Image 1: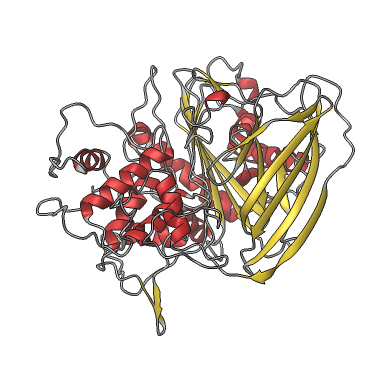
Image 2: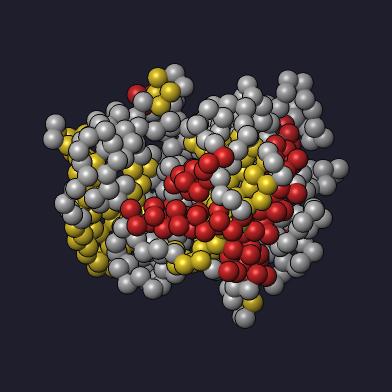
Length: 557
C-alpha cells in the first residue's frame, strides 16, 4: 500500500513488506498502565534491557540466546534516528525499512546495506523489527519485545532459534518513539533440518486464553471464517505458530487436546500458517498438540515428513511444571526435487484502541541479486532486485550473466505465478487447475497449473472462456489486465492493502472500459503506477517484465 490515513476514529492498516514477514502493529499506549518507572534511564540501559528481554523470551521458548552485535546495534540506532527525523511522514506512507537518500538522517537504504555499512561482512539473512509510536511514555523493554512476539505473524524474528546475533537501537523526540531490532540468522549451522519450532513452545505455561485477532493480511478474515468472529471481535483462542527450521511446509495439520477432549482448531489459508482454537482456551489448563507436516528443505530440495508433539499450559491456574513431551519423527521422501521456495506472506497488524499509535514491522532479507541488463539507473531496479531477493522472480542465466529482460512481455501463466509468490501464498500439488488449456505439471512440479489454480482460487485471475473453460496461458498480459490482476491481489490480501478512491476521483489513465476501468482507477489512486510516465502510457499494450515487477512490488513492499 502506498497511502496511509491514520486518525483517532479509524486506523487504516499500512501494508509493507520485503522478504518473509513485514507488517504494522498499531496499539494504544494510553490506558495500559505504563509509567516512567518502566522506562530505561538512558539509551544504553534500554538497549541492554531489550536484548535481555529477547533472550528471556527465547529461553522460555527453549532456544539459545542471541549475542549483542555492535554492528547490528549501530545499524539499528542509525535507522531509529532516521525514523524519528522523518516522523512527520509516518502517517503518509514512510517506508519503515527503506530509507530515502534525500531524507534527513539518511544512513543506508535497506537493512542489509545498513548492516554492511556498520561493519557486517555480509548482508545475508538480516531481519528487522520496527516499533514506532507516540504517546505519553515509552513502554520499556517488556512492552517493546512483547509487541513483536504477541503478533502471530511477527514473532519469528524474536524466537527463531536460527538467530545468532542481534542489535537494538531507539530514538525519540518526545512524544514520538522509534525502536529498531536487527538480527542475523545462521540456518546452515543447524543440522536438525527436518525439525519444526512451535510457539507456544513445549513446556511453556501462562499462555493467554485468546487473541484480539486484528492483523492484516488477516489470517482469518471474517467473510471466510465467520464462526471466529462476533462483529468486530475475534472469539477464537490464542494463535499457535510453527516454523520449519529449514525449508517450506508442503502440508501441515494440527490436533489439539485437553482433559475435556479434542479441541477444534482452524488453520489460516495463507502461508505462514497460523492455527487458532475455535474457542477461547480454558484458564489453568494443560493442552497437548500433535503437529503433522511435510516440508521441502531449502538446501537439498528433499521432502521430509514429521510429527511434532508438545504441551503447554494456559494462565490462571496451576500449570507451572509441565513434563517434557516433545517428540519428533521424520522421514525423507524417496524422490529429491528442487523447486522455488514460497516465502511467507507479508503481514500487517493493527489494534485501533486509542489515539496514540505504535507500529511494529518485521523483514527478513537475503543478499542482493542483480541482473546484468538492469543497470543502476533503471527506473525499476529496486523492484526487480527486491522481488528477486524474495524469490518471486529469477531471470535467466546466459553464459556468465544473469539476465532479467525487463522489456520483454509477460505471459498470463507467468504473471499468475508471480502474484502467488509475491503474496506468499502456499502452493501444493493438491491445488487442482480447472482450465483445460493449462499444461499439467508432473510429479512434485508446481508450475504452471498449480500456481494458476491458486491464483484463480484467490480471485486474482479469471478465465478467458467458459465453454470450454480456458485461461489462455500463453497470451501476453496487457497493461490493463496487469493492473486488474494486481488490484484483485490487493483485495485478496485483505483490509488495508489498498484504499478505495473517493467517489468522483479521476486520474490520468482511461477508465471507461467496463472490465478494467474501475481497477485501473484503483491502481492509479493507490500509486501502483506512480513511476510510470502516464502520458502516452497505452493500457492496451503488453506489459513489460519491468512494469510487472514495479507494480507488484509497489503493492507488497
